[in-house]
Image (cartoon, rainbow, N blue to C red; front, side, top):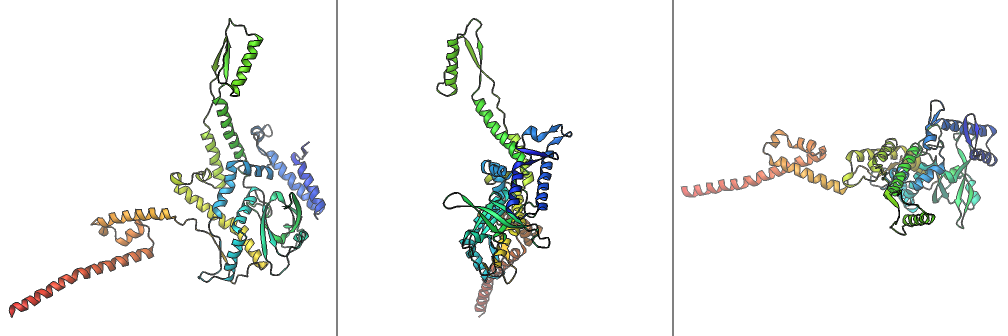
Length: 489
């Protein structure tokens, strides 16, 4: 039996084994074991009710083949093997971490100690790459961790020790998924600020000689990252959980359409035996051999005596509309525009509205997840261990400006502004209808500072032209005066 029934819920045997394993390896009390069991039972009961209609007479999940309680292995396999599942995880992460990631302490041009050391640490440990991997591993499961490889670890057992105050050096960082980082000890002291949080982890570390080994690690050497939190601060919601059914539907549609085409492209045949023909055993065997050779591409000719073979009608349907519905549902719940999700965000297929919404989504993701859950905890821990110098002022995390115009966009905008300005200047009544400063601000979209500079330059140019035009006239008047005086003499 793969499972046991309890209070109309299903509790996996593997979960029971895990509880026994945790009880043997950790200092969980009987009450905590009971609470964990209750949580598992509660989740199983909730999962058992999914898809039920008319009481228990109809189970949509069972009829459609949906999993009621997907595991980490299910999400990981989807990420590894299904294109859209990978896009859901990777697309936001790729844009989130693109560009420079800076720590700024002051607004002036003077580089402070923490700013300088951060750049050295970031480049030496390739932190952006590490944070990107950590982000992915966190999203696949309920949490991810970043192991801090500090210089106080001399042997494997030292990982289990708390990091003591001192000037530490960070040698490396390693991200791990939920599958390879098990929480094996929790804080049970109710008055502790860390009550209910992990104390120790058991991490499966790849052995350079092959295989892996379990290492106990103290929480002070771990950056624990959780996304989509609800009640728990330790475990969040996997990013593929809410779209798991849609991913299964897409697998059916895309795979089914391919199978449909494969079978439809090689139509079946219907044989009609002539009423005056008698099929012998040898004739039947010969026809079967021909059909096998035809199906396996050994020959493309069928010779049938006394039998008329007709093609069966092909049944091939276009899955575009059905696939599009699934993608729209995924886009709606993930916040990823469908154009971005399907990879058509470039060139003539791009949508300005989609782009603006997408960049706003990524900006929010930076501010609400990446910075408070990954970057700042890492920097704060480095300051605590004196890997980085203490910040004299409150530091800021600065990201690449997502809304900054590309060079092509700047050229295109400049071209449009030049054309508009040329038409405005060519119209003799334009300035009387719309003053230049109003035109520059409202129609060309220039800010006040730039408008003031343009108006100032324009007035200076007009004054210079007036002076230049006035000079010949004054010279002519003077010449005429001199000639008049000579004639009077």
